[in-house]
Image 1 (cartoon, helix red, strand yellow):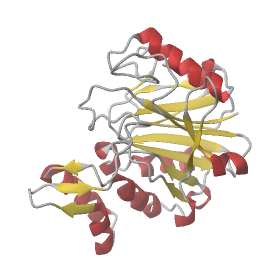
Image 2 (tube, one colour):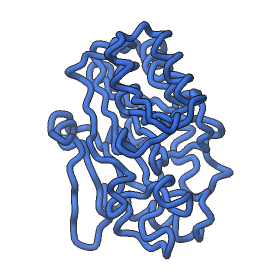
Image 3 (tube, helix red, strand yellow):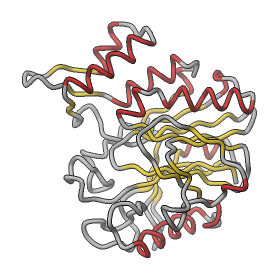
Image 4 (spheres, one colour):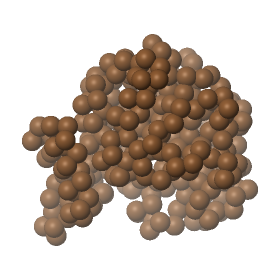
Amino acid sequence: MEPFVKQEKSNRPVLFIIESWMEQFNELTVGFTSRHGGVSLEPFTTLNCGLHVNDVPEHVVRNRELVAEALEQPFEAFTYAEQVHGNEVVIVSLEERGSGRASREAALQAKDGFITKETGIVLCAQFADCVPLFFYDPIKRVVGLAHAGWKGTVLNISKATIDLMTHTFGSSASDIRTAIGPSIGACCYEVDQSVANRAKAVLEEVQAAPVEHSTVMVAKENGKYMLNLQELNRILLQQAGILSSYIEVSQLCTSCNTDKFFSHRKEGGATGRMIAWIGLT
């Protein structure tokens, strides 16, 4: 069953929430935005939440405010980073609360993952095909969020996030719930030999079974490969100690569903960004 459930309310942004998590854990707010319900103009119509794509900054900030209003959370809680497709993960304290919500300069610099134990902080990361990774430890009450494009994936940002949760807050990997959000699917994600080699190398590094290699990459006659980033991240999460029953995987492909989401690849780069968010309220 699709874990990300569409939430549509009159005069509000269209959101996709992890409904089962929010029903089980009342303290959580968690989900993924769509492209609808904002104020941006073409080609960023309409709920663009990325300040780095040459949209009108005031429109982007208003879109971010609209998301906060829809979630009934203070805008000051929403915390952003300047993402660089790496595997650096940062602990967010109350001092960093609200970083980057209204300007890129104020964002947490050169980070692609966050964790926090503080209530009243909503972690946000931006996406338009890359894989959103969500983490929640209900025992230690720690949330995490990571941005995994192919570079972050092969750098194993999922393990980096889990390691920081365990080393900093005493989380056990077997307690952590994870979710893999809407992103470009194996149906649409063609890569060249160099990217395929990096994916193969990380599979070999974690000693993945041969059958897992075949589920991650399929060779094409043109010498390229169809890459399943969701499956690769699922394998890496499991290898890091996450129970298979604690890994939710969205079936929503951003490239197939440009009526719902922005897709950098499908739209030739001229498009907006969704945000993934998670926080303890």
